[in-house]
Length: 491
Image (cartoon, rainbow, N blue to C red):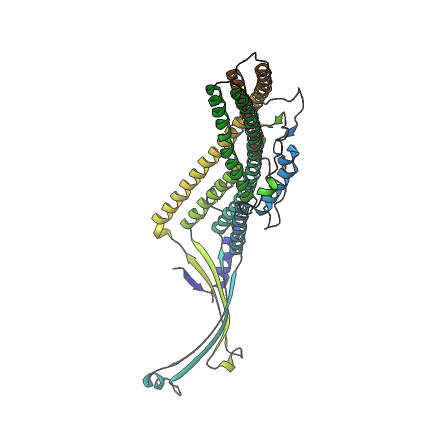
């Protein structure tokens, strides 16, 4: 318990001690310094160029990258999600909580002032009353006080605690930005997945219609004796195999619509009607400028959040270290006390007290040092997490660059394959009609066409998703301000 020293004859000396402590105040524990992390000068991932373009069509960290795709529905969905997504609302609420805790910690720099009042009545024994001339057995006491206490932050415990809260709030702000990036990316990915599935569904239905025509032609020939039962069976089998793809694709289309609806904060079936009409996948940027790794690390909100948490953990080492030193508290009281309520605040009823409290836990140094060791271990963990966040950011970007470049190359090959297989299927039908080719050649060409067109549609969707992932890796989708659902964190 702190020992309080009343101010009376020696108050001048006590005031001198307080002034000296205030002037000599310092903050114990390590001062935070941003860790030095070695990063390469440039990214090695190759980026495909479009039509020989020699300038980037999009740049790193585009705050509204989804608009680059020129799809009004996508832009509407992303912007709605940034205003209504429940995960983002939860992240903003956590930021508001961190800000409130920071404001609360800031009040520790100033005196704490409280007011109180007390009224009591009691009865003493006759012998106790007789000991006081004219004493009464019934005693009443009334008291009103104004109390103040102030920790003199001689060794920086309060300052380090505020520093830690400031870093916590900054980390929480970066968390909001990271969720924002993730939400924008998830909406765009889900949207392109939906459009790709709708294209694959169109391809499957179109091929089923073509194979239905082939079956009708074979059936007519079979009735005329120009085809065998074996030909009929093969044609039916291929039609049924193609038709079997349609229900599975329809289900996946429904799943993608449900995902998008939930991402924008609506019930799962809310967007089914609006998204039912297929739309083509957008043109993709041919070249994306990733900038430098150093710029990326300054821009990525997850890296920023990890660094701020390291700062907070470092400051808390100082909070724990300050317990090795004495804690000085200045307390004061002004009030009035009387035996009758009506006598309160009358002349002679005033009371006052000024005291300096000293609380020193040097006898409990074992526990203090254990807390210091725990704080130091927590800081080392935060450092490891920061370094891992840096490596993860670099890996994400290198992978996204490589994936996007290779996906564009795959697109080019599959587009040619789809066109050539469609032409082959057309020629096989012409040859079949002319009697120059058998049914097997037609069925094989139609099966190849379906596979090539489906693969191309799937590849186009994956390329669009790859573009989104690259924007996301480059910390795109971080608007300058948040929707007005809560106070926006500082950039």
